[in-house]
Image (cartoon, rainbow, N blue to C red):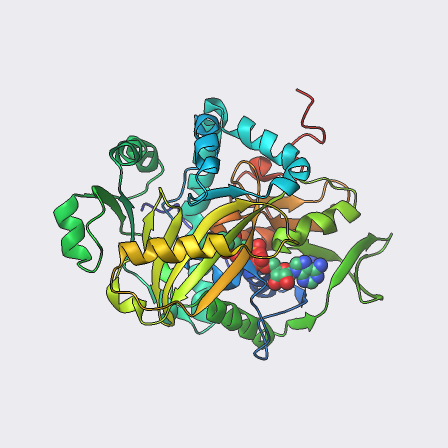
Amino acid sequence: MTRDPAPLSEVPVPAERRRSVVVVGAGVVGLSSALWLLRAGHGVTVVDENPPVDGGDYRRACTFGNAATIAVSACLPLATPGIVRRVPAMLADRRGPLAISWRDLPGMAPWLLSFLKASRPAEFDRIVPVLGRLLRLAEDGHASLMTESGVAGLKRSIGCMHLFRGEAALRAAEASFALREREGVRMERLDVAAVRDREPGLAPLYRGGIFFPDCYSIDDPHRYAEGLARAIVARGGRILRGRAAGIESGPDAVSVVIEGERLSVERIVVAGGAWSRRLAAGLGDEIRLGVERGHHVLFPGGEKLLATPTLYPEDGFYMTPLGEGLRSAGTIELGGLDRPPRALRTAVIAEKTRAFLPGLGAPSRDWLGFRPSMPDSLPVIGRSPTEPRVIYAFGHGHLGLTLGGITGRIVADLVGDLPPPIDLAPLRPDRFPRNPFRP
Ligand SMILES: Cc1cc2nc3c(=O)[nH]c(=O)nc-3n(C[C@H](O)[C@H](O)[C@H](O)COP(=O)(O)OP(=O)(O)OC[C@H]3O[C@@H](n4cnc5c(N)ncnc54)[C@H](O)[C@@H]3O)c2cc1C
């Protein structure tokens, strides 16, 4: 991948522009923001109900259980032209990669409508270069964070692979080649023999594939988060365990309310992942943030059967070899934050993984996570329209691990009143109209 030149330096901002900041959320986005803020010279406190410190339970954070790939090739949004026609068949297939919690449908209607609008060809053409630009900056955003966190050894530079079972899926992937190439993504086509040579443990269910040499995986995203937390503390940042119940603005400060106490500072960064919409709503900001529930299943020992993180797009999940085992992670269930996991979702992932890798043993863990997702697959990075001292950084959907670092750099610029490296207009928090039924 050709990378844009690193546009930001790590030089601290002048003393008069250094702020006291609370970051709400210790997922990869909040932690990366906190570390970039500390590098710029700001005073930082991170607040999270379950931060990745002291061996606490971190499983609620989406950062814990993702597919662990740095997917710099993923410049195509989910809302592709023509998806409207494909969705009914996808939903009818109970074992397919897409499901919906019908009881949550009324609450999701505005998000779905905006998703459909985002799939119009003109919108798709507008979104791809924005995602492409962010992805070209991704490595500059987080490589140095990994080094500072003492976890650079977690990087597995082995590329990623997409495999296709059906002829139509393979043809559609080929059609997207030009688009990805335009965004600087390097790719290699793989025929059946090339896949077999690379991954002899895979059942020969594929007709071909694509290899992305610049993608890689992080051996354990939880350990990455723990490393970031340690680096934050080492730079003098604080990590506080607590639930932010709301945000208040006053003439001289903005405050986060935590268990009845007020933490008053000059700037607040909301990086609460899928829970961020509630905090923003308290300030009067209506943000079109939805939830895409995703699952993983862990197969201890399975990492010996596969070297390359491998996605079958038709099935919607990655199989990623990690130190703790083979993690099969993905699929989408549109629904709320409060519903329990659905056993069918993990059963289907487990069953399909066994078909792809016949030598697998029994799984040892199921996990449900909540992707914070915007209808256009672009994150929200920008100031609150109602309270400019509050900065939003959430909505990274399928790409939060990949884009956490660059998001943190941009957040530090916003807090330090520096020009960000990209035009933030497409990432504005209020880019969707309050009432989606208006034209
Ligand atoms: C199955 C699956 C596979 C994925 N695979 C990949 C992948 O391969 N590559 C990739 O780049 N991305 C992937 N993702 C997406 C990625 O995991 C997310 O985009 C990313 O983790 C989001 O990070 P975050 O910091 O915004 O949110 P989170 O990690 O969810 O962190 C939010 C934090 O905020 C805290 N919080 C929320 N509200 C409050 C409050 N009021 N008070 C205190 N604390 C609060 C929560 O406790 C949580 O710790 C995947 C996601 C899933 C579900």
